[in-house]
Image 1: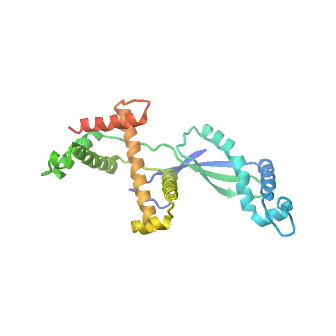
Image 2: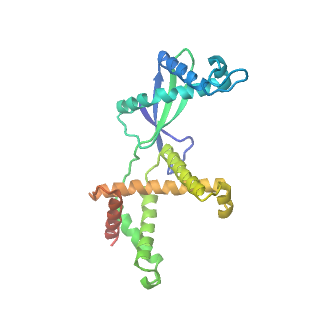
Image 3: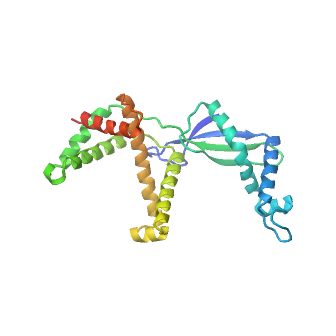
Length: 265
């Protein structure tokens, strides 16, 4: 059974929404078989004094790595098919890879697992066309005194879209599931680390050059990713409402931007 759960102590006006939580019970006979197989697999990699690698007795291997690690390994084989069945039964469409929490994992009774995922958040557009026009008026006022010759037509469009987007997000920004935000921030960090590696740089080098702490960088990535997700879902909702279609998502996005600019006039 699926249920949505808000993040602990999330303020009512927070841009964060709810995760979708699924509860899974794994029967004793099933997890015991998986646990045994996982322990045998782990034992082949355990090094212990007095035994060659791969020859460590299972009991000693279990004591060496700890039961919790064996349980986690067992779940690697137990979760995939059960998760697929669970989301089918719950009639949900997850948009992110799940994480899980082990609630109970006794040796001689059923295991209880909590699976955390996320579904597409609801977007209530309301009178978004009115907001688009208001945003355009505000944007033009901010640019009073500037000429197209100074910055160019593209600059004016970018400025107007920026004001319109901020207004739409402030009024109709969807509540983003924390699990989705967490996943996307991790992906952005992975891209950063990959780029740094390509340039033979360490994260500490990047932090020093940018004058930021790791906490500030995480806050920046989280804020930017959150705004990006809200904007993405808003774009999709507006495109759907305006009946904008194309097999190429990039073209859909551009057509949506063009339509928003048309509606702003």
